[in-house]
Length: 352
Image (cartoon, rainbow, N blue to C red; front, side, top):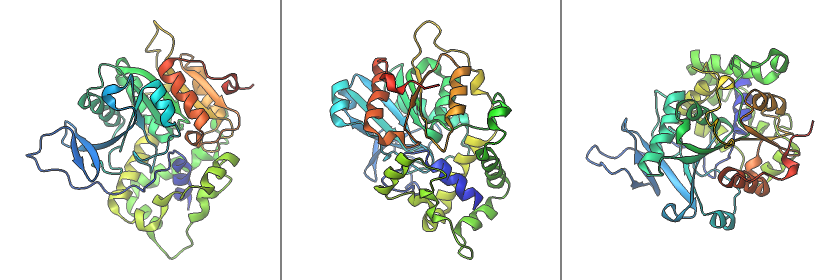
């Protein structure tokens, strides 16, 4: 029950995909050396370790675009995630959105050695294989922001701009003040879940797939986890299909989710709150977008992060919850600030 609550908390990680996570299809034979192959309806590139990543494009074709933005999906999602930017806007700004399945999701091969470093490396390799140039934009959503923190740590020189949308908070970051986290129930849930996922995966698998006790399938619409606007979104979406026991019973799906969760909420090899400004010679191109009514990631913590890292430009949506990428106006502001450097409307400045 507790871990399911935590999973749902992170499923707000967004975006909810149009199709649930599935085991990756069999990789091509060793004779296939193409870096851009068509498989199961999606294009895939081969990474240096032999794994394949599947990706899709939205907006302007890559060769005709002025801006290439790699979109990193959240927990339990895929490259089919929703990002409510209109085709008209993408054509106006000449943006190509590149959405890919992270390791073990959708049609991408799993990575049993998943780590902070490998997640950042996958993004860089994807950019290189697709010849995006020396610099490219990245946009992460909730749990999909931890690979981007890795990029900011390891390869900031490759990033033309960064948007962290409702980025989740790892309560193991050493610099988080105890007065902000002491009474935060999310911290206890995440630590308990990481312990069980790391040390008792068989027990966790049994609990999530057993039928002896009542399940918590209705939690994905629990107002304790989602704001009013989030609940409005959930009314017109199929919900979190990945929580269906038939899906989680597949060990490939379960193992990918478990590894992703443990890396995201486990101990990191750096503290993001101690990062130095990687772009001291110019105006910041790094943005955090947060919903004031977010019940998955509290805005107080997000304000603390931006306060510790003043080179990050912080934007707060007054009535926004965790599902910001379902708001077309917010998505337009995100892209305009990211690729053009435009100041978002006054309404997105945090109110004290």
